[in-house]
Length: 394
Ligand SMILES: Nc1ncnc2c1ncn2[C@@H]1O[C@H](COP(=O)(O)OP(=O)(O)O)[C@@H](O)[C@H]1O
Ligand SMILES: [Mg+2]
Image (cartoon, rainbow, N blue to C red; front, side, top):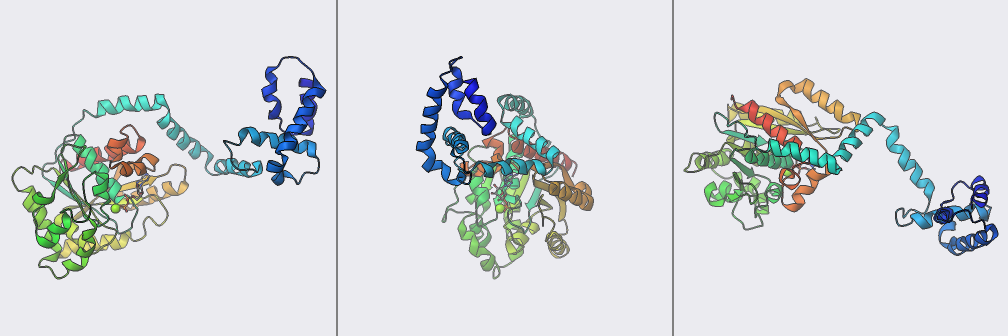
């Protein structure tokens, strides 16, 4: 075999065809084996040689064709040349950072890595976050869509609730994504925040217990809320409807709420204004991507206007950097810029971009419950701890 094999390799770069034959010891029936080899590729030629037919010599093509025969199930792409540049691409950009990120990802997915993380998390799960000296009502706002408002609202709320705090989430987005992620019913017709805002229904009548998280309740939003922006215009005290409802609920019997988190829609309309009037704090999630800071000035001006005219207590208390991707320089640039501009308001914890985080809502869960040992879950628990510890003295 080796005699036959070497001359072939000299002509042709790759010869995995004979690898299965390597098991056979020193037998050297050279002519016998070469014949079937030639016939085999001849049969496969019409299927796979087409892309490689540029080469004039059929002998050289044969081994190339046999390769994909063995690898076909793994690599559906007929032309191997196309695969090579794909492999080189990731290495060209930020090799060290890429390697670091890849190692993190892999550690996250290896049995040992996950066991270690699980051990750490199970110890941390006993931890109770400090109770705020007074109830904290926090608006999670950013008029940009897709920056992580809902994901942050849901995961911070779940993390706080799992660590001893009682939390009320108000879903103020007609898309109802927070309701979905918390696993509460919110199809059209289910009483929710629309009824609270427009028909003055008490929150106690529409609030739902989150199925998997004791201590966490949710005022759901259905698509019915889509019309509320317009309907609110003609309602009395249109900017403070939510504030009145939240106060009545939290001061009512048996509410015992430590945190209220309001998940805003991606706009600065009356719904978001209602949230800002109802709360003392604004938490702004900022995605670590290009254009992340665009529109932030407009958001801050809106906060200032509400503060000046409707709610003097309002402050931007927290900025949370989301979807951080260690493989890009851009993410670090955004982090640096945001920290330079906003200083201590920015949480030390950044939320990594993680597939687990985006998968969780599909199962009606937060990532903190869906995959507690994942990096995304750990980051949100860390962010919730920071939020709680910073606010303990407020
Ligand atoms: N850390 C993250 N890693 C990966 N995907 C994320 C992360 N945070 C959010 N996402 C995904 O990004 C999309 C937008 O997030 P979302 O929280 O709905 O933003 P917003 O409420 O601001 O519109 C969603 O599909 C969500 O699953
Ligand atoms: Mg949202």
